[in-house]
Length: 310
Image (cartoon, rainbow, N blue to C red; front, side):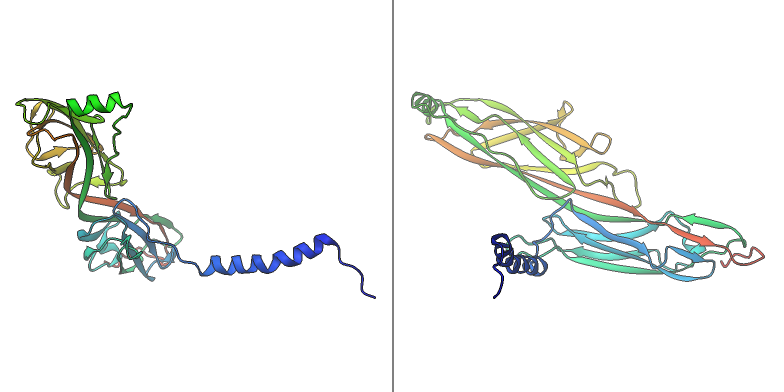
């Protein structure tokens, strides 16, 4: 006669197959596209982290566009070591353009890779030295942002208050990229009643933040460090004038220490709505950007005499 199984054992036997199904599902499931701050350096590494003088090796880079817009003119340049000492004939890779991830199609951003052939430099026998090859990835990018602002005439606002209703403010929507934009305004813009002449302006501020961990700069020149091209679009109902640091705005803004900028604008209502309307203010930033990555290679000398290979 078979012994009766404990109640706890029966429960465990029922749960185990379910756990197996969950585990298998976790292994085969797919994740959606990764969204980040523009171009990401996924890998920058040597084929061997420890070599002897004269050994052949490769430096390998892999990059991906994780922002929400296309990255243009993407190229990578080796820094930190002297290319001739490592017999690197070409220290630059041109990736051209990289497409962004797609939320609708659930596809990841475009990835490209490149390898650089190298030879470990000669060192005297008995000596060891650690080198730090770096890679700098340049690209041109655009960040867009928008904010819905409610324009309401004063009679409509009074009626809403009498009914115990309020108007809420919506957050800024900013595309994923190395720069982030925030449009700051009140909950609403109040105009005179429709059909009446008026002249009323309201201040708003536009904050720009560098969140990409890199630098706003053009390859090969420092004259464009921290400079961002700025454009603002408003519907016909609104007119907007922007100034930066007390002067008239010239469609270019310079980030303070490469990190932040604040633009002050005055919004004027050209024509009041019949009751209330949500008007969309859009901001477009165009700029050059770069990010860095580094790796290490330890080289050991093996020859008695110090005779450089180059």
